[in-house]
Structure formats: structure tokens, C-alpha cells
Length: 120
Image (cartoon, rainbow, N blue to C red; front, side, top):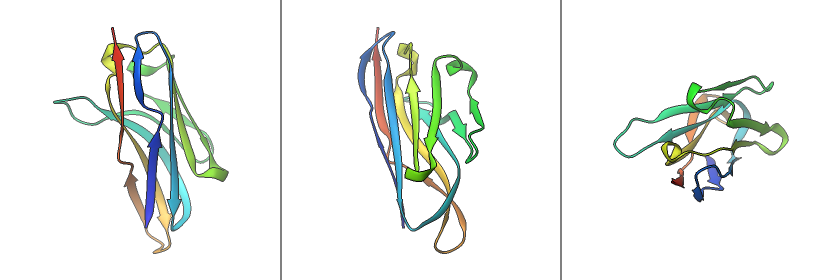
């Protein structure tokens, strides 16, 4: 089994910053792309940012210049630094990882989500 556990969410005022972390553990052989998604109430889950093992990143247009994804491959951990937060960033943030586990099958795993609330 593989678990992804997020941390770092919370309540912050507009213009503030938060740093999310997501640590993967369990029957992991390797992890390829990791990413962050968010889901606001009544909306579909949307991509925020992804990062490959080599460090290539993609950031969604609404967060470019404000959010930065990074990872520590040795710790199987991905981070999301969120600056200049806006009320529209309020959502549950989910970590995702494409993991080669001990069954030698590449699978998509999700964390349980962490709430980010930005007050105006």
C-alpha cells in the first residue's frame, strides 16, 4: 500500500502565504510525476501544478508567478509554496503521485486533501 499525506493547509488573509507538503510512504519503488490539484465547493477538481522526477514543472495559469511546486526525491515529498494568496484560491488541495509500487504497476495515488481558506 502507498499513502500520500498532506499538511500545511489553514486559514490565511488575502496576500498571505502558505506552504503545503505531501509525503509519500509505503510500498514505493519509484515515483514519477507528482502534483497538486484543488477543488472548490461545487466545482471540479483542477490542476494546480505538476513536477517530474527531473524537476520539470507545469503551473496552471491562475497561479503562475504566485505558486511554486518543488520536490525532494530522497524524501518522496512534494511541496507547494503559495504566495500572494487570493480568496479564489480557497479550496481543498490534493496531492497526487504516479507511483510504481511493489506490484510493479504504475498507479495514481491521491492524498486525503488539506483545506486552504483565504479570507478577504
